[in-house]
View 1 (tube, rainbow, N blue to C red):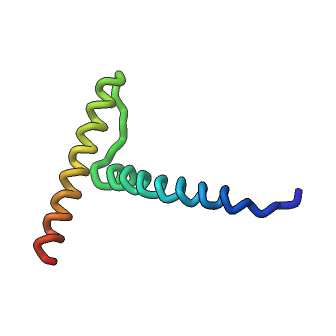
View 2: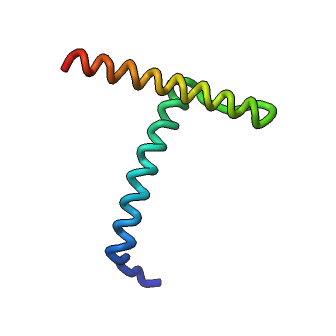
Length: 73
């Protein structure tokens, strides 16, 4: 099978999707590594609660980072 070059429009669409995916995956990687995010609960409501708390902790962590950065700048 011969490989073909992708078109310019497809390459641009892939670049946009890739940049969004990279931002999202960094958040989940941070939550998994730092907070030990591993969802093993019974029921969707408990899983949603655990994700909500993990997101809240991540957002507070980012807030502290940006506040410290603003003070030193």
